[in-house]
Image (cartoon, rainbow, N blue to C red; front, side):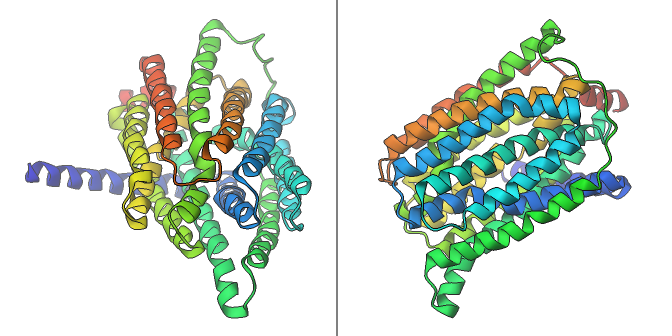
Length: 428
């Protein structure tokens, strides 16, 4: 038994080493546009760090209730859903680069709005702006990246994007959570002032990806009309993946926006504790991103995604039963690794089974479905938590939806191979 475990660990290490090598070989040979987009992803990671766990903690410190926090997140998600109705189609029609730049500029404006004094209407408006920005940049950068690599290499490009984004997210999260404590210790400032310095710095950083995105070149192609030009197999794929996204999105909204508050208010974590916990999770993710392309080659994309995400659910359910903060941190890190690390493979898989001209539209529609389910769930979660962040029920509800979504994905897509997979099989 011990020898088999040792052999498995050594095999995984070899796969990881091979994945690192192939990913960096690909990056070394990549063009200027790919590198610019990877840098855009890096700075987007930094700015997105202040719009998730840091933002929920900031609102909690300001004294907003769980219902108000759920409302602010939900209104932002609603604006995201409305924007997604048009963003993918506009990206297909007018160019992914143009919309990417517009979205990044909106991000600058929205983040700056969080510098205002406590005000529910202003923060709702800020949430709307940054959510719109995310809905514009998400489909645009995914589809733009898909034009920069061959099908068999897409997983490496998306892997580099995820690594870059996660590094930025890690740096932003660490600085964002530690700065208020640090300023409080060194200057005697209160935590709220410290958080405002965080948002001031994030506003400046948000300008940088705009400069890189402006230098990206794009060859425009004639767009296809949504649905009218979809053949029946493509419509079937759209419906199947939309159902999966709805299930996962609803489950995520019950727990994920609240996780930092759960650790701080429910388990007594300080801002520094949160920074270290989330950094551990992100470091593990970066390492995992180098391994998954190689695992996808040997195990298949759909099998890898399904098994990994199903395995993550057990760790999620155990988090609220943790006897101490350290164990909760490890459980959360492993859960995040297993749930999120297959995402580059998933993105590459989807881009390869969808025709090029409608990729942004397909991504936008399925993300729209996820967002609608997520925003409904955020409102429900505000009532479920009811300012008591020691509850265990939301984790169980989340697990049920995650399980349903993952199994649905596996049974619907297990026999649908992508071009990249076919090319790899032929070369093997």
